[in-house]
Image (cartoon, rainbow, N blue to C red; front, top):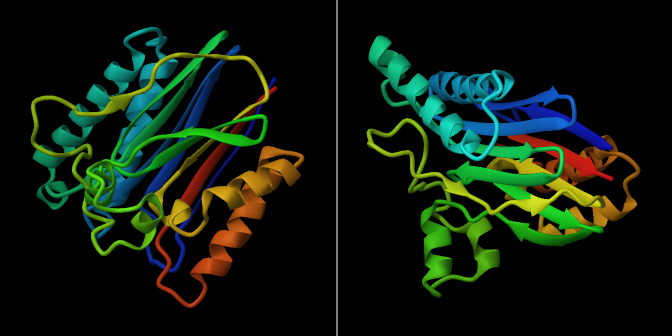
Length: 241
C-alpha cells in the first residue's frame, strides 16, 4: 500500500516558484517536485512546465528503463521552447526531482538542489547529492556536510533545467526493490535548509500518516525560519508498506 502527501508554501515571499505533482496508474506512481529560478514569476513558469511535462510523459505510458531520461529531456525541451517564445522567460530555470515507483521496484532522478531522502524502517538510508558549489566542496573534503545549510554559496547551482546545454546532466539512482517499510521525502531547499535529518527521522517515527509527518516537519521548518525572509518551501512524503 502507498500513502502520500504533497504541499507547497510561498514562505515569506510574494510568489511561490515551487511546484509539486504526482500521477498514479494502478500500482505505479510518480512523484515530482521542482524549485524554479529566475525571478519576476518566471521561476514559477519553469517549475510548472517541468512538472507538467514530466507527469505527462508518465501518464502517456512512458515508463520503464528510459522514463527518467525521457522525463528530464522533455522538461528541458519544454522550458527551452518557452524561453524562445517569450523573452521574459529567457533566464528562467528550475531544479527537478522525480520518484518513479513501479509495481516491484523504485528509482529516482534529480537535477539541482531539490532533494530526495530515502528512509527504511524509520532510519535515513540515502539522500541525493546537491548539484551545488557547497556540495562540490564537501566532495572535495573542503567543507563538512552540516555546513552546507548555512554556506554563503548554497544557492549557487551547477546543474539545472533551462541552461543552454546539449545534454541534460541529471543524476539517476539505481533500482531498488519495493519491499515495504520504506519512506521517501522530496523537498526544496527552502524546506531542508531549516530542518536537520535527525529531526526528519524523529518526526517520521512518531507520525501515523504521511500528512502527520509533513505537518510535524513543517512546524520545525516554520519555527527555525521565524523572523527570516523564508524562501518558498515544499515537500512530498511517500510511504510504502
